[in-house]
Image 1 (tube, rainbow, N blue to C red):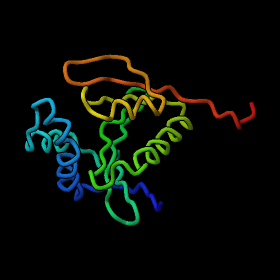
Image 2 (cartoon, rainbow, N blue to C red):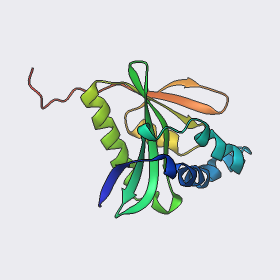
Image 3 (cartoon, helix red, strand yellow):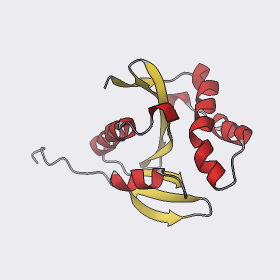
Image 4 (tube, rainbow, N blue to C red):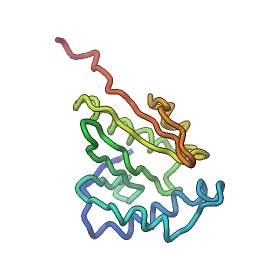
Length: 152
């Protein structure tokens, strides 16, 4: 798998907003809350290229993530894969890179997932713990893991 996380520019915003809508559509439709324009605007309102990384697989845009500083922690504000790239282990490969980065920094990662989304199982599988249940979202966090290979 030729996986790369690449820097993003403001010029990528519209394409990523479209990708978000495509990725979120099935989950939002299940709860009767899909609105293509609202999904698009949610991303564009707070778009910050400096925290956004393009997920490229073999040179193709497969998805993106937004990892923002939040107080002394990190917020995984967005993490989407285009449906054509889902169910192939790519999400797990990407989250492992993000977790390794957070561990290196000694940072807690916060993330929210739509309550009826498959993302809930994904985050639990990768060491996140449920901290709060909201009206539409579940909120998780993951504490940094000590690297057992390091000597003190």
